[in-house]
Structure formats: C-alpha cells, structure tokens
Image (cartoon, rainbow, N blue to C red; front, side):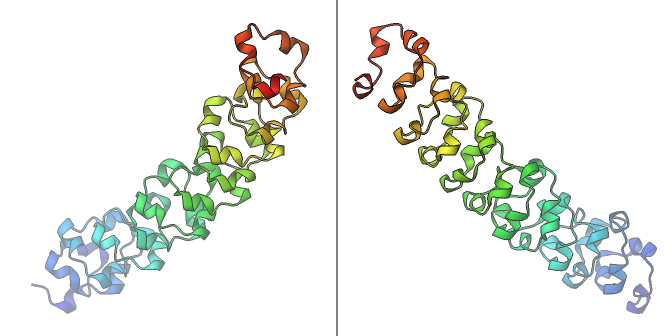
Length: 274
C-alpha cells in the first residue's frame, strides 16, 4: 500500500499501476504531465473516472483531448481548456460550454458534417459574434437557427448557395447579390422560398433572375414591372398570364403568335388582354 508521499513522487510512466482509489492522490502537476491521450489511456477506465474536478481541470487538454473523458468530466472543463480543443472535439461540449470557443476555433470547422456533429442544443447556444466567425463558404447555413442566420451580414451571406436561399429570413433576401440570384437554376428551387421572401426581392435582383428557367409566377405585379424587356422576351407561353398590362406590350410577335388557342389567350387577366 503506497503512501501519499510515494504516490506523489511517481512519474508518468508509473500512473498505470495505480488503483482507482489512489488516483485522487496525484497532484495537479502530475496530472498536467500527462502528455497525450495514449498515456492517459494507460490508466484504466475506472482510474480515469476516479479523477477529481481539480485533477480534470489540471489536464493539458491540448495534448490529452477529450476522447477518453466521460461526459460528466467534459462538463468540468475550464474555459481555458475549452479554448484549446480542436474542431473534432466540439461535439463533446454542452450549450453552456460552447460560448467559450474562440473565433479561430469556429473558423477551423471544415464543413457542415463536422458542424452538425455538434448537438442541436449546443449549436443553438452560439452567440452572434461566434456565428459571424463561422466559415459559411464551407459550412453553409444548415445547422443554424433562424435567429442565428439573421446575425449574418452581407459578407458571409455572399457565400450562401441557391440550395440554402430558402433558409434565409425574408429580411436578408435583399443582401443576396445579383450573381447569387442568377444562380437559381429552376422554378423548383425558387418556389421553395416563402411568399414573404419572394416579396423582398428588389428591382436589381429581379433583373438578375433567369426567368426562362425560374418563371415569374411568384413575383408581385410591381416586381413584374421591374423585369427588363429582354427578360420578358425570354418568357414561354405558360408565363404570359403573369405579365402586367405594362409589360405585355413587350412580348415579341413570335411570342404572341405562339398562343395556340382561345383558352390560352383567356389565361391572360382581362386587364392585360385589354
């Protein structure tokens, strides 16, 4: 039976021989000397679980990591320890701990797969400054709450692709660039937006739409009036009914002659036919 003095004179290579009840006698300096997860796991599971709060907070987490800590032990980590974690370990953190991640740590998350390994509750705890630190070009916005998406300004939003436009709050639609709007490939993706989001499109954005692919069914009359003549002349027969009286005059003779029957002609609102 080793004395406390003997235990506290042990070197790292000898910790593995200690029983669980002896582990709490290791000093903070001895615990801090554990240089890697490999050395940490030389201790038995029972021995690791016997570590005290003070000992857990003495671990050099940058070298040891969290893989071999229990959830209750991870919950004991200090902010300074959390700030040394790599993105592979962020999924171990709870909502109260994620706020201690630094901007550089958050920017290191390489893709949405790693981001969504963090629990929903923990991701939702990220504050505005942290959300703005995320590399949206690599992560996208799936995995953020609506409120967190609203924290994003024009710079990160410029990285959002058309696959995620429907996730944006209406108030952020005006921040989308003309190039982003032009990237919408078809009506299906455009129709995924809410009515409120469609209504937020401004004139410059309207003129960036590929109306031959997207159509104009979701546009309000004042937005239809913002279409260029070139856009009007790209419209197919099915879209003529959504034109206003102001814009129908810009249809070409060939477009007019493409109207095959009286039924199609009466799809136009009476005010437009007049």
